Image (cartoon, rainbow, N blue to C red; front, side, top):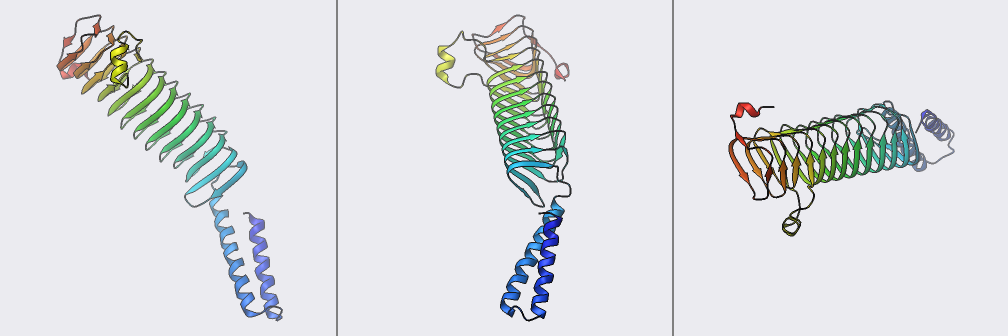
Length: 300
């Protein structure tokens, strides 16, 4: 809808009134057409109002504007900008610059060439790429593959099923659950619990309240592949204010926690620091003797 549509429906209503004045149309037909044109005019005005803060959108498919959302389906290119509504993309979408919106929901193939700032959730299935930083004030969830070239900051919970890669820090304030294959190019941070199930490579540190690295998913695998390659590699340290519970992991530096549980197929090249308890499977390898410390000594 556009200004032309508004003008057209105004002209149709004027013409309809003239026809009525000249007795060229019966009362029933007049009322039916007047109601129809009035509704169309109202819809055109409303959609024009909804488009006011909308970015420029080129789409091969369909697009819809409501008070709460902008939805595109098919193949779309969206300019950057600030939008006070949700953005929903179904199909193939490109966002050519920085985008600020309420929530971002995607299904299909989506690439953002700038920063993403979402004041709601970010929820994407399929393939998602962000060339700069990704910030969301609520939860973020990805299923399929997701790659962020800058920092990832999630004020809520981060949930990943599939492939996830972040070139810089990934921070999930309310915790993170990574299932599949993950690569974190710097630190993995949270004020809550971090759970890793599957393959992962952390280039720096894991810093959180609790950390659970589940390793292999079946009892058979854990028993049969006792000498298998470690599934999770942490090139820095694991530091948790509460509990560390890991298996099938190689840590190049230290592990620190109030309670530390080291399961099968775990190697620590640094030192293990614990406050209350240390539990170790028989196959655990420590390059240095563990050390009991105070809670103050494991503070982040």
